Image 1 (tube, rainbow, N blue to C red):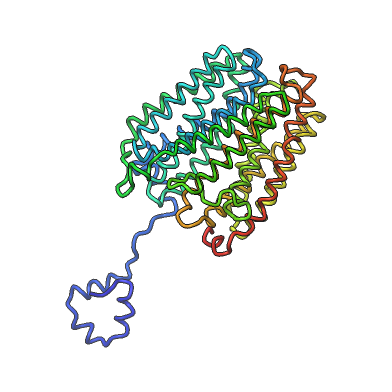
Image 2: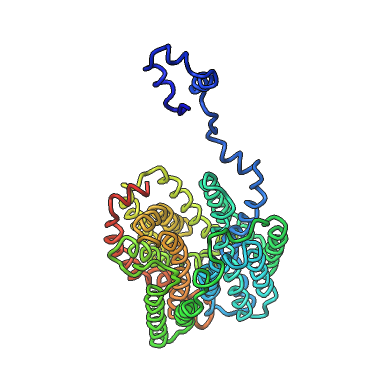
Length: 512
């Protein structure tokens, strides 16, 4: 029988009498060969997502992303009001540090646990933990209980994000992944706008506790939706559900936790010697964690994570250093704006939101560029982030509120432009068997950097005057050092560009 793709040419080259001798069925098949196969329209993946039975599960995933992303920006707007009521200004850096600590630990462990217990149970458990953390912060009589709640929110939220990425790969066919990831990114961008708005509304009404209650209610709703809508949650066949393949490396996770806690503790002390000692201890534990992970059977990060001269190590460390060096505005921006310019909590929250909006705009603006332009974009992003941090060190103590906006835009636009190109270079250059770890390591490293940066920002703020409480007279000094203090970290970030630029041409082409 003739192959459909070659029948017309063969029929044209043979004598007509041979064609006439074929069985009638073969002639009929040959005559129908040119009929084109039905093809999907460019909008077919979107239509399949909306109409093909995937939408309910996608809604569950979007709610999980929303809770994690919007909560961080909402709390950035609420915390000044909370600190004014319950005190604890020296511990303000921990409100973000503990959230990121929980997110890192849960994010590293949950992907492995989801293989054992399935997506539905993992999603329900994570959302329940997030809800409990929100309720703890809502009823907190002091900063200590708020911090316990923030840790719970970080553990639950970080787990939710990890589950979303596992579920995206498991629940949707490959042809829908670009659409699913694009919509998830849109949800993340929407949270940048709505998170501060929600926090500002509650803060302006004097009801900052109700902001936490609102997110607890949404988390409970997620539990109910996951119970009914996430039914295809069994681990796929062929993947080990126990043993080494799914073992959770608790010892290394504990080391990671101790490293960040050590550095976060330094951020609460006004004693310079003790603070520096704890930071050095935390860095040593962190290096030990990466070295143990490199030789482990079940690794959490790629083997060459600390190799700053390689594309993988350079990319991961780029994310680490620039995440650490640029987080202080998210933590202290709303408070400093209220103290320095007398703006409302809502306005302070939207200053932070402008950074996230700039991230989205920049990411869309460079999305059409090929990977061969990658290093140009990455260097431009590093320059924008550096300008943003150093510019804020001058604008907040001396300028007007309008002078702050260009530098917040630089912070977000720099990271937004560089992010995708760094991620693609890391994945394209990963060793055999490390591609999945490399793709997961980049966002996990970003959360580690945010936690470290929050701790260092707290250290700088306390050394500059906030250790004894919030005082408007100290705002100028604090506003300078919580940004200028990160100049050495940004300099380390620039050193990673050499390794990133060594991405092999073949790997770059494959990434395109």
